[in-house]
Image (cartoon, rainbow, N blue to C red; front, side, top):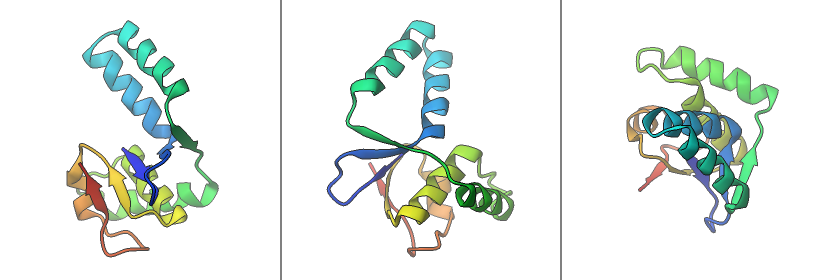
Length: 113
C-alpha cells in the first residue's frame, strides 16, 4: 500500500508497509527473494514516511472504530498518514478495508489499481 501524491512521483510509503511487504515476500517465496525485495527498495523512487505520535493515536482510534473488520496496524498507518498529509489516492491490492473506512479529510479514498 502506498500513498500517491498528485504527480505520482515519488511514491510515499509508511515505513510499516515495508515490514509487512517484506514479511509476505519472505513467507510466500523465500529469504533470498525477501533480501532482493529490500535491496530493490533502496534504489526505488520511494519516499519512506515515519509515523508521528498523532498518527499512532489516530491508528488506535481507527482500529477501535473498525474492530469488526478487523483493521490492522499497517492499514491504519496508511490511513493516518494519508490524513496527515492530505493524500486521497492510495495504491493497494487490498481494497476491502479502504472502501469501508471513512477518512477525516475526504469522503473516500481513490484506490489504485
